[in-house]
Length: 330
Image 1 (cartoon, rainbow, N blue to C red):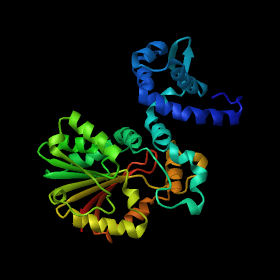
Image 2 (image 1 turned 90 degrees about the vertical axis):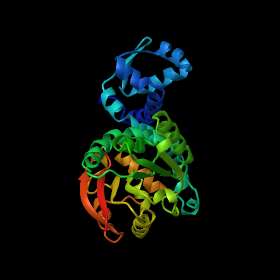
Image 3 (image 1 turned 180 degrees about the vertical axis):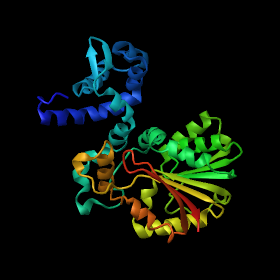
Image 4 (image 1 turned 135 degrees about the horizontal axis):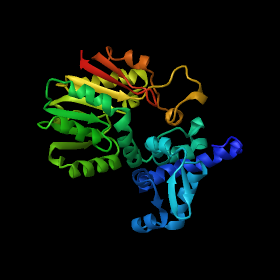
């Protein structure tokens, strides 16, 4: 953006643009511009049954920070469109999935308020965002690990399965396997049920509504041989709870031969003003929620005590210190 602009106005306008990015992605504006290079806004709104003045306002918010340019009824990519399009799911996670948390920031600061369910997030929106994040933050490395496996598991399970994308990926890789998806959020499981049904895999996938931290043994768990957990392992923490959870998972899934944990880790020795896109939002959100974010070293310190051996560490580090830990039972 032009350096002559008022920097405070830039901050304010960017705050308006952030939810506009999430909305523009969800309703298809960003994809239409990306795919066709130009968008006729009145036609797009009419075809989608959208309120034109409101839709125009979303586009105006994008134009204010040079994400798009507008000429009469046409919308084309602006200076920052490519970067924003690449990171669109991060904005959606921040504003659609975690918007209520940030909106109530002053309410969650007093210790007296931090009791019970003291914050709110949209689990379905987070599942929608995370499905996209997985494709570039974890999938290439995940597939390298899974494709390198010589044994075919009879049953695979995904902890915090969200939208079900990981389950679909696993069953595509292992066509003779069945799968179990566990998630505490009913809306996310609804997304997963729809996705697995659309993929023609509903008869091979069992979806379980439960809390990974407290769930009890189930018959569906007894034959699981490959266990995965992506983008929720930080919920195991703090340390002693993580150790206990890792031990319980050994008991709940007695036949597991491989456990893949893919997760974000807290940044170390990076100045706040130098953080890449998403890192600050992710870490601030989890601090507000009171969720401890471990460093890589924190993770490496618990595996043996928790009953697992670290077979290999796959460092990714694109936005939030992503890493995949490949574990075997000890």
